[in-house]
Image (cartoon, rainbow, N blue to C red):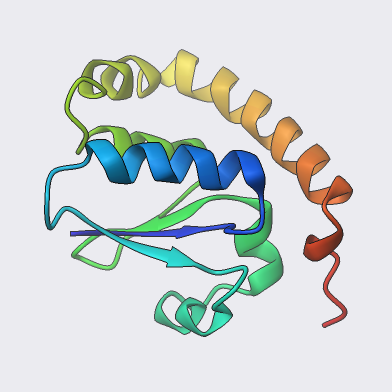
Amino acid sequence: MITVFYDGKCGLCSREIAHYRKISPPSTFIWRDIANEPKHLKEISVSQSDALRRLHVSDQLGTIYVGVDAFIAIWKKLPRWRLLALLCAIPGVRFILGLLYNKFADWKFSRSAHCQLST
């Protein structure tokens, strides 16, 4: 079972998670909206600010994946997305995707009013 910690106040994030929920096999994921229910972050000891900045998932062993690695962990469990997960996990590809994702995530975070927490 994979636990996904996502930003439920981000329109793009919510649409993407809704798609994953629709196509995921039963009992594969636990979905945690950390923008509206930050209490769930105690499960992984991550600040709400860090969790809003980057997608986080944890697997059944408690391993935490962040950013591109989180997407790869999700895609590995989704029908028709496994090949994409394998391609994205290739070291050079993963590195470039990580740079692009981090740049986009920082930009999105800086422009989202709800991400500007005062803690």
